[in-house]
Length: 157
Image (cartoon, one colour):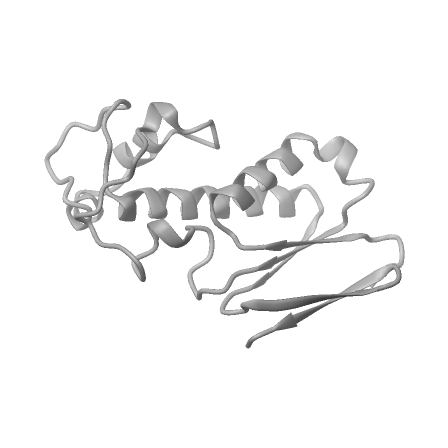
């Protein structure tokens, strides 16, 4: 690894991490001078969703507590993303044959799938911008050990 590359570790890949990735991308012309590599650690196997929106912790009957118009902008709106989904995917979320509205609240599973799609979109944009992105699914962090200029991460897996 090049000594001039500085790594940024992000622990957890839910919505907060997605908005950090968006901020990095939006400011890539400045931040690429300081960040050459992003390491993403996620406790679960599914990355980019967040615990409340994962199929491991919820189902299609649990509703999100936020509508599309309340979600700060990402690559596209939640409702806009839903409108692009095939009928069989919408059916999985209990949204088949429904008109998708920006002001409606939909299932947490649908929101999790949306966040995952946005996560993937930002990873692609950052990679295209020249950043090295490393993902570590199923890697729960149990400790961070300071060590001078470098830090060590202890993973449970």
